[in-house]
Structure formats: C-alpha cells, structure tokens
Amino acid sequence: MPAALPPDWLHHLGQEFEKPYMKTLKSFLLEEKQQGFTIYPKSGDIFNAFNHTPFEKVKVVILGQDPYHGAGQAHGLSFSVQKGMVVPPSLKNMYKELANEFPDFKIPSHGNLTSWADQGVLLLNATLTVRAQEAGSHQKKGWEIFTDRVISALSEQRSGLIFLLWGRYAQQKESLIDQQKHHILKAAHPSPFSAYNGFFGSGHFAKANELLVKEGLKPINWQLED
Image 1 (cartoon, helix red, strand yellow):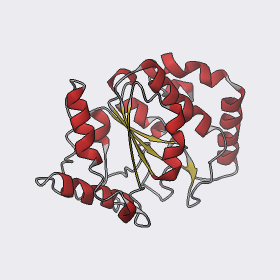
Image 2 (cartoon, helix red, strand yellow):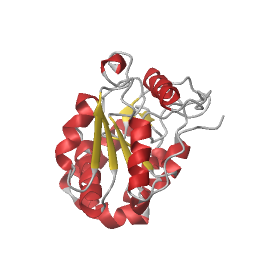
Image 3 (cartoon, helix red, strand yellow):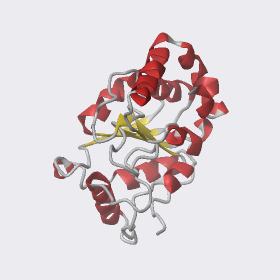
C-alpha cells in the first residue's frame, strides 16, 4: 500500500504506514479480498486524490465521507465518478450551485472531477475504500486516522488553503485545521436531503476563487469539459 502514495506525500505521511493502525487496516483489506468481497475503488485508484494533487500544489480541500459503492463509480476522488456513470445527486447539486454562481457555467454531461484535482483541489474522502453495495462498510477500520493525518499535515506544513466543509461529518474535521493559517468555508451537505438548508446559495466556489486570488494564486476553473 505505501508504494501507491506519491513520493511527495510519502515524505509527509510515510511514517503512518509503519503504525499499528495501518497494519491492522492492511490486514482487514486483505481479509476482505480473501473472503471474495469486491472492494471499490480498484487498488490502483485508492490514492488517486494524492496522485492528481501534489502536496505542495494543494489549494482547496473538499472533504467527502466514503467512496461510491456501485460498480464503475468510485475512482479515488471525493464526489467524483468515472465517465459513463450517472452523475450522483450530490454532484448534480454541486453543478446547480456552480451554475448559480457562474452565469456561463455549463452543466457537464459526466461526473469526473479529475480536472479539479489536477488544478489543486484535493478531493479527499475520510474513508478510502468500501465494500461493493455496502455504504460505510469500511468506516472505523483505520482510514479515518490516516486521512485525519492528511488534514493535519496540510494544516501544519502549508498556509492559505481553503477547506470546504459541507455537512456535519466534514465539519467535525474543523478542529484539525489551524484557522490562523487557513480559510474554512462551511455549509450544508449538497445531498438532496440537505442542499436546501444552506448549500444552495453558499457561494463557496466563487468565494474559494476570491480567496485564492487574495493569496496570489490562480483561481480554479470549475468548468468541466464534456
């Protein structure tokens, strides 16, 4: 598993792979496979968020909970699905908000957010794997300890990052972030169950870009090409 993490991230997080919780997690994942369970995303995509967004290039962090559990959906980026898959409801609502914030935003026909990741948006799930068709099945197995360390390392080693914390679960991570050094934007989750409680109208995508410009950085082009 450590070999799949790029060298720049390994520099900051390599010691995590020697800790007991990670060894327990590795054993758990191995056991799942030995018992014949299908795990998403495929092993080569588990660390995709880190592959596409180098440590020193992170500008914005969008926190999700765990990967999609349907076939062909998850590919290691929070809220994102592979091309050819139906756009999930939360992502549809993110697109609606983008269209409200940016009049020229065109709703994409797909849900692949790789271009955001390549621009410095770390699309990080708290749990990086899931058993097929069983939402939340790999929670509390060790992944959250690792991804909390990811957030802490970014908080400690970087400055001026923008953390988008949508929903109660993501907002529980606020304590890991140094608010003297970073920007935190909070709103309801984009899920259909909560989007009307403050996600719509939050203006987070435009606000993130305004903050990036203030930091002297290039704003994110949120438009996805079909």
